[in-house]
Length: 307
Ligand code: BG6
Image 1 (cartoon, rainbow, N blue to C red):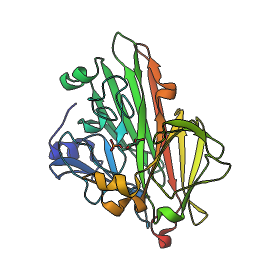
Image 2: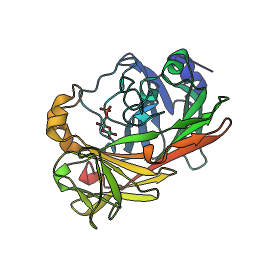
Image 3: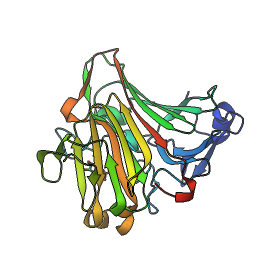
Image 4: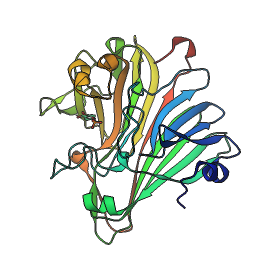
């Protein structure tokens, strides 16, 4: 059921005011308050832009100069890369990271779970525009479940009569206090493809540190990662059914080249993406489905501010 009127959305999916749909920046935004957190996002791209656990600060980084325009991806938060990750495998004139992040989703369902968590299911399917870029019928659901933790499940269903192949990422931008004192634990000894050097290499047997641009596809199917600040674990990141983890920070020069990214913004963000990249694309026959999930669990250390 496609509803584009905020009054109707509030009546049908608002759960008595726990989820509010408003128009902001000319886009439909939702603000959802669970017992343990507040989550914000937009129907365009099924794009989560903020996740604030109670008495804490935002776990996600949203660019202060993000552009909010119909058909454009928002910089920061959690964009969805689908049905391809990165450049289109054949035609590089096609949109980077696929078209889901630029497309309008609809609200399929909302619910309050027994434990007080809220769930919002956003969905999209093929359209005239999508068929021009990718000639298949599909159903894509983003199942967002949040309370003290945030779980994001991206579920693809093949509703076509042909088999199709996808790559994908849940492209989360984490807010951090200072990239120079941040480390990522959990990828020790993991092989990765360095997208900057265009070569394969391997992480040393130590946590990942950051002192320059990083764009890496780690081949790690089972993950429990921790963002560390000054050696202390601040956020746990898990993924289910993703064969790779992408770690990205543009650093200063690339930040300067992006119109929606402040020059020094790189020092306060780190992308850690649950992904299925070309190293293990997902092949779905008609009627089959597949889900990738990222689960973000913040530590409640309100007094310390951003992780
Ligand atoms: C990362 C890629 O996932 O996304 C990088 O590995 C890319 O190569 C980054 O630069 C941001 O992409 P975009 O299209 O949002 O600027």
